[in-house]
Image 1: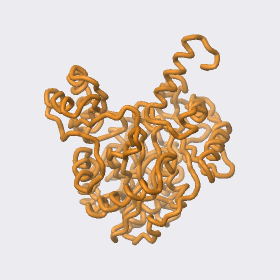
Image 2: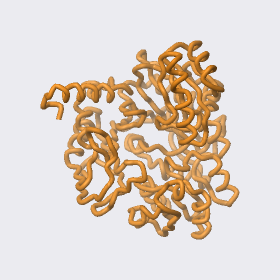
Image 3: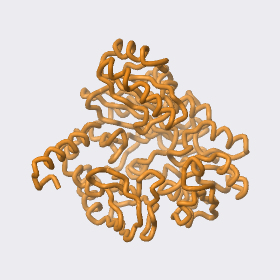
Image 4: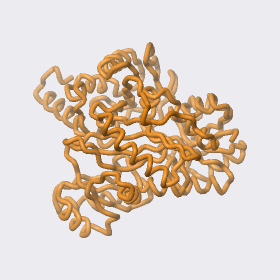
Length: 458
């Protein structure tokens, strides 16, 4: 493996380029017409335009991406996250073209990437599961299964995530109304209309475990991340470790995860996601067969470059790391996702960045793909940057993040920096008891204050 084409854009494309440079690999950036002046294009060794701004004609255009690899002599493709990163067919076509896909094999991707199949694997290996179903044939079966399990339940898309194709339903009428909507959204988002359902936990925490596996039998669980602060099923803030996990529960679930990954012949990075109920019990949700947006918090508490590890696994190297049963994690890390959006309405806010000054100082890292003079396109996800801080304790990390957010200047467009400051003053966040409903509560409280004309709501 000598030259890597990055089939992505924005901060993750730049992140992969940096790791490739340090591992000694050449890089090729692909870009849409809208991204011709993007930083990943500037910093890669070579670049190829693969189509217009519309992602379906560029970043999701498999023939164009494979042609770019052939023209530039790239012998590997890194998919980043999103776009084609969990597309088993794309991984297969890379193999047929003699190109290394930097990620798991197509078979492993199907085994863990499809949510229904992943549930079957989880059950096989003894991972704890919420009551759920296989793929549902239609609304009638969905109603019958929901009544068997007990309301509330959640309809979920088998082939994807990110909140698309998900509907919380609390009675039979809602199932009949929401089932076709969930199916249509799943078909539009993932080209897979399959829907299943699970028991819904009202106020869960969202906990995920980072996994690394090489091709020589080595499997490591690199601790967990707390991702409970979400809005509409999209993560907003992540941290490592979770303030509610104990060393005993971490070790217990990690042993099962390692066995499941090893025995399904999975190689590369993976993230196993769980919910934690009000009693502190974990239940398997799904597996992401790619690098995660929030991987930097794990890097900060382990001292590892996860993308470089992913590259080395793809090159066939044997990874030399200590046994994670005796692993010592360092301090606490928090990540805030900075989006181009209105901090009150959360409407996307593309446009020209007139000024850009990222925070710095001890224990602060910023992963970003923007600069002053860059025009944020309206065609893609609104993520601009990730601010990651590290400190000896969680309390110190929160203080450091507040300071970093105060320093962050992005001119010309609106961002959600102000909303992050609100989150980091909330009592549930400060004491670590936040759940996936915390942001919903905060927004409801702000709306109520605004309706009374209370100036503290601004």
